[in-house]
Structures are given as structure tokens and as C-alpha cells.
Length: 88
Image (cartoon, rainbow, N blue to C red; front, side, top):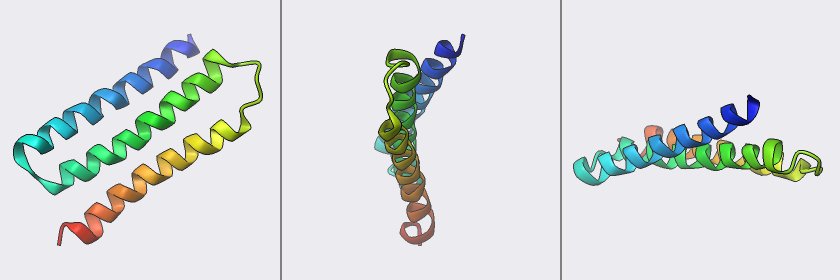
């Protein structure tokens, strides 16, 4: 059951990324671009967690958790940067 949750989270993040980037390409609203980059980071995070928890459950992937956290932090940092400095 938990495997389905991890893969559904990764798929949902990927779909959000695609929709945001597609909307940005049509409308050229900067916030859509930064939101798309944020969700790209969240997609990477969810995919790494999926690999860690379901594909390689017996392997110690402590570093992968750090990579996932950095991907999420990077995505959120890009969104905050876009909202604070680039939309002025």
C-alpha cells in the first residue's frame, strides 16, 4: 500500500510540473515558471523517496534522503526567489 502512495505522489508532482510549464509557455506569466521549477524539485524529491523506500528497501540510502531534501529545498527556494525578487 505504501508503494502506491509513493508512486502516486511522484506522478502527481510530475503532472503538476508539466501543467505549470505548459501554462507558462502559453501565457508567459513568471509565477508559472517559478512554480514549475518548484514542482520539478518536488518531483525529484518524490522520485528519490520512491526509489529509497520501494525499489531499494534493504539498502542503506541515507545519502538519498539528503538528496531528496536538497531537491525539495532547492525547488522551494526557487519559488520564493521568483515570488520575492523576480515579480517586481
